[in-house]
Image (cartoon, rainbow, N blue to C red; front, side):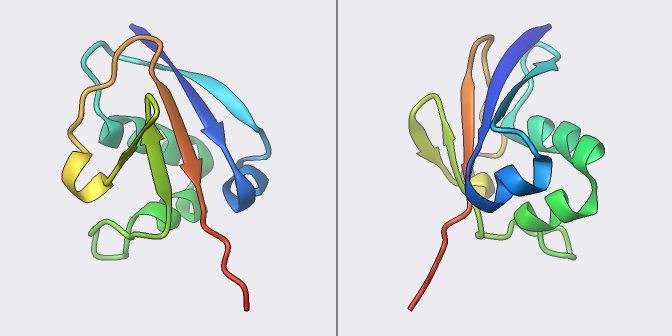
Length: 95
């Protein structure tokens, strides 16, 4: 097993009601595996931030893994390692 530090910002923080948490995953798990586990815990509202109804990746969330921005559509199979730090940001627009 490996432990991943997950940090939430802006509206995502309000949805999950925490700033950060440690998530245990099986060794060799990917970003998609992490999102699947978090979706099981936080439900449809969480899933809908990341995926369209047809299962395609929604580009509403900025994701960083170990300090580098990642695109779930291209980098979803990126393997995490023990101690990885994943951050989720929901950009806030205004006018």
